[in-house]
Length: 490
Image 1 (tube, rainbow, N blue to C red):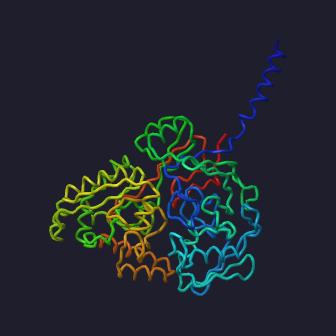
Image 2: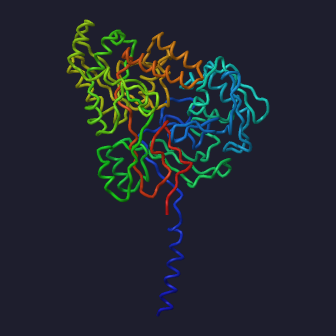
Image 3: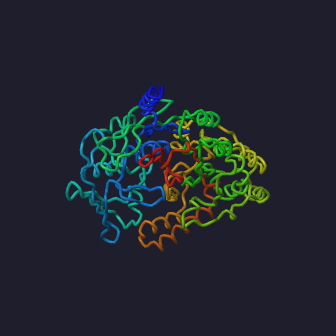
């Protein structure tokens, strides 16, 4: 009997062995489905949340601590006082279709991004480029019109990743990059799946497969986590349930920071909003803490300008636009504004939908009515971001170090301030870190003084995951779900 028992136990262990093997797949939840998968031709952060550092890579990359690290360029030299950057490319890199990556791909990618007909959402990243040349297949020289100490940082954005010319006709739906994962499938409205790329030049990822599931409803997101239908939700949309998840030993909660300045953007083409007194009144009408507590369940950091509080150059200007409804009413009276009604366009993110109702009530309290329109993401991108057809909107700007958008005359909120433009021009021409710090602080002060928008809070990164998962970013120095170091513990 003992022999038979041991034999049975051995057989049981043998057949159970596969279940004990290290798990090599992961399912991530996402609130928004990307409109396409081309980070060089779309503005939606959801694109980078799928493809950045997974499918596509740039010459440089942003690490989880926000630092600039080597990417497809293993190193670079700076010449001519910051007007020229020589990038030394990694040897042996191939695209997912097997074609080699070399200097000609860099020239194509950068020239495409800065072309007159480019659809790149961040064309300003490339405006300073004068020419891109190859001295050999693994060496690229980028000559700038003027010195730019921040150029390696610009090349780390998702908008600056390297692309394959042959893939351009299909890049939006079947992207081909050089990253550790290749595109496998996109089931519209449901999920995108990636598989590990066997020919990856770097350290092979522990994961063999990754699936991004789109779950926009907070209640459904909570249900999916509790049922085990998703393994992690890096940006979890139901903060009201975090305490419940934290108390469950199956899960862990990852609370960090993001680059997401959440703002009440104002369209300066609206005659009323072109008046700084009206903009200041709107800013004073908003109770930031009420907004954070009501829309974000206490998660978020108040901000008074368009800059991340975790950045060493941040200036706390929240007091300048503090909650003061009586001051707001007085400013509207000084501006001669009565019976003002503004259109408030809200994208589908929970912070916008919840926050919009709170802000509408706060504006009503000072005599401004709002007409709320709840938009799907594609509609918001087309109507608000592309065509500037709105008065107010709530949105988190999650791009890293993006205060320069206030110098873009074609940007959706149509801000124009020569004083700000001068500061940004000086910043672009400055390579000394101490001087750049001074200029960044000046830039923050200018837009705060001008009440360019109403600055609400820095979006917190509240993520949830199964307890056995390691390697997810706790902070979000840019919108990304970098899976290169994600793994399951045994």
